[in-house]
Length: 439
Image (cartoon, rainbow, N blue to C red; front, top):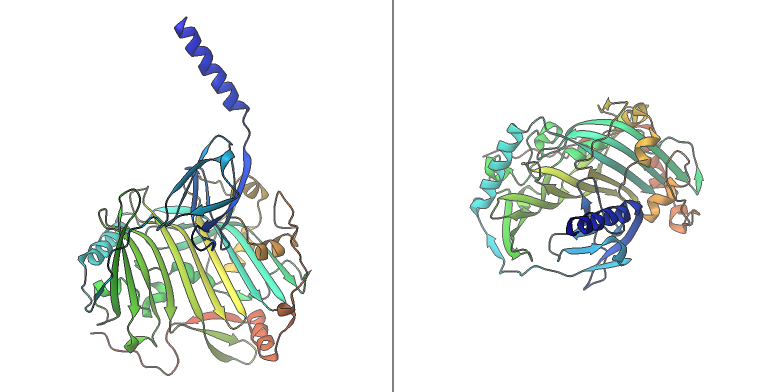
């Protein structure tokens, strides 16, 4: 009788579970103290189901109502809640216990940096062929025009993104509230994907060979690159985190140099996150007709989270923002994890990312079957005006241009015209500035 009752209970439980259907779960993640949205927080259900919050702290995914959702972000208390009970506004409490900040006046500083970089170099050599699949999004905004590109791609993912291959993508543009054709003419021929290959630890310098990054203090490529400060805190699970701040030294600030903050698991010697910005970086705008070059300084920031469940340091997700006057370009990568997709087309990106996305074409089955990062309101305004973008729900956001979008001065018009008709490439060293000799 006991066996029969146990079997019956198991059968009924299985029947109830089988009757559950995936539901759309959405919300916004905010700092409990400030109320500010928390971007790029991890929203995890299973190896095949998860996402991250967007720039506005919003997320959306499909899962069973009974499944537990785990929300994590460095410096905040982790939240675990049944999907059906998850509130629409999730407020995360700071979890860390800060210790006194220590400033290091010489490059060697704490040995954790050297151990970390050397470990990542060994991993890069051992796992140089390791590859992951990513969801990619690029959004461009300038007065009067918004553009959006989304795609699935593969890339070498250990330590640093490289060897990008696009498989399926779609693009759209809204100009003055109206669709102006399916092409991203505002970008022209671009190589903006090279920013995805930037990292605090480079295993393949490529075009970034003349750029200084935090790992360079280990390789002694130049003396006194950074001023370094440390702060340690403890997560609620007992993990000791070192927050290492690299500040570009004023003596070489005119050279392209990446500084920022590393978050490192001290006990396991693992890089968890990097928040950085580039100084002294310029782009060249080529006028193909007049054969003339124009130099422009840009502001650049990046955010990278890492994962280690495959036995090495791997890019989990990455975002960067490029701004110049009223022009703003945002790129996002999200690792699809253990979910492996089957692609019919594969186009290796060369100098032209947009061309590669176009050549890969659009496979609607990939987009219907997979959860991806929720679009922001501005991104939805572009995507839902273009029928080539797939979506289960149509946006109700206003699509009329704002006053700021309509105000365009003559200088910006000329700059955008160059972006529309010519090639954007990097200038790794500012013009007429001699490179400081390595010591």
